[in-house]
Image (cartoon, rainbow, N blue to C red):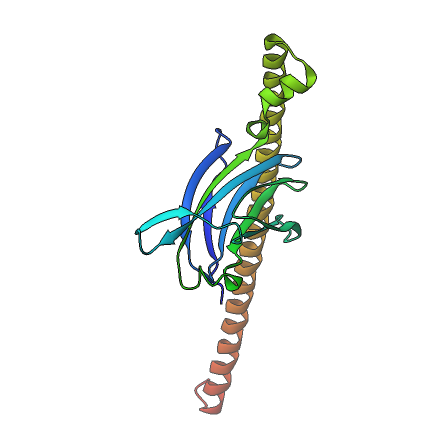
Length: 216
C-alpha cells in the first residue's frame, strides 16, 4: 500500500532546486510546485540502491525504473510515464497554481529491491532556468551578446508570468475573503433573528404561565 508523503516546495526566485530522498519499495513521494501558467518545467533524477554488503548506496540496475505522474491544480493528469533508473521528464503548465509531482518505483517487479531502500536524487528547474542556453546558442548560431539578450528576454517574460500569477493568487484570496465575510455576516444575522424569536417565545410563554397562575 502506498503511503503518499506530500513535500511542499515553494516556488522561489532561483527557479531551480536539487534534493534527494529515500523511499521504500511501496512508497510514493509527492512534491507540490507553485507554477505560473505556460511555464516549462524540467526534472532530472537518478536513483541509487542500498547495498547491504558494502553498506552504501550504489548506482541502480538498469531494470529498476521510476514512474512519474504530474497533476495540475484541477487534478488533471498532465504527465504519467514510466522511466528508467535515471531520466528526465518535461512538462508545460497550462493552469497557474499548485502542481503535484509524484514519483514511485517499479519495485514490485524487482526482486533485488524487495524490502530494500532507494535513494532518489531530484533536480527540478522552472521557467527560464529550464532552458539549455549553450545548446540554444549552438543551434541558432547566436553570438554572446545575442545569447545574453535572449536570456534577459526570457527572464523578463518569466518575471511577468510570476507577477500575473501573484495577481491571480491575490484575486483568489480576495474572493475567498469576501465569501468568508459574507458568510459571517449572514450567520450573525441568523443568530440575531434566532435570539429575537427566542426572546418573543419566552415572553409569550411567561405571559401564559402568569395568566394560568392568575398572577396577572
